Length: 540
Image (cartoon, rainbow, N blue to C red):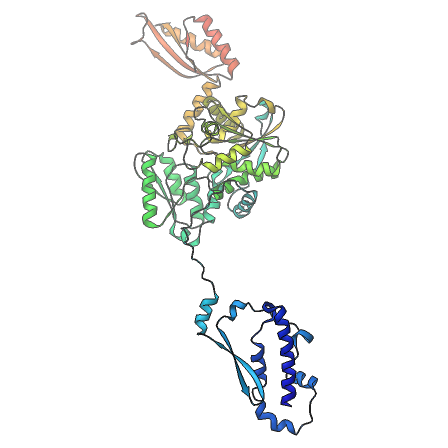
């Protein structure tokens, strides 16, 4: 019986040797012999029992001991890489009349494992810094829209009565209806929700008094993230109060914005806060770009959409990426102040201007900084059709129109789009559907009053003149009657008879009157000039 088994096994081994000669790397399996040894290790102990039993055929013996050749009746064993066989030594042993083979491993298992695994170089990981994409993807904007949909308002895009004055169908995207009155809530919320939980526990810190700071204060409080806002000592008390009401800890430090920024960065380094600023990172731009998605969803038939530009043109660049992806034929226009044409000059020279960084204007706010970087400039150059500039007078008139017709106390940034239509800078879009983004409406009361007074003068609705009259009581009465006959309203009147450069018995009367429009102001001026030829009208 042992001879029959040895004959069958040696025959199968010969067939495997023949195969090994042609395909040495595919079928060389040194563990075949160990399987045989395991199956027949107790063969000598069972010979006596097997002699009393009827002989088994080779087929029955193979089925009993599961010795079915793999190349004939079953799947072939997996190939073993020859490199793994290094260190193995084959030795022949005899167990009774059956020859078997054992495989000895040279070295311990731990040493073999170390040799078989190739060492990989460990990469030094840099601290987690938010990546900045050269070009914003539409998928990023869509992801931001999904993530912030429960934290910001989906503002309406509505037809405006102002359209009748300028010959275009104006649709206002009312982003001033956000909780803090600014579109920057979108970018800030997406930034804060993208932070790690560890960083959210430590807190964030900003150094500005702009709408960005108020957005951080509000949404950080809503997300239970500690927020610190560093402002210069000259910040408006109303702005300081609003940030504190939103839930941030406000610290006044230094006379300038640079001093506040340096202090904020030092506090961030010492306490582990994340220093945030209005930069052109992919996350912040993606949040702002959701405005473009909503505009197309609400008014897909628009021919042109107008955005504010200037030093904070992230809204323009990111929304253009969304709009151009959805409708390549739509026109996207950026508008900035003629006093500070930062975007236009940057597009000409090919890089971002830095001469206005950290300069704060009473009307336009912060003029530059990290918010206008290389990513924003590339997006603007690639996707924005035109960037135009408007005068300050047109911006003030736009603020007045929005207050009268839409009951909106929009600031300069929010009034830029309408200012382009008032200035007549877009004659090619007459009779077309124009979307105007009113992105913010945060004005302090003193600044609002000053801007509106100036806008009324520019709109010829408040006039000022001075007249030299004889120093008799009835002369002033006659002047008031003449003004009343023209249906003008006297807002203020002052008389001077001590320091005038006139005769002894004369007085100088200065009047501020309110008129309906430019035509009414011209009629009043002609009437008074006929009766008082020496009247002097104070120009705008």
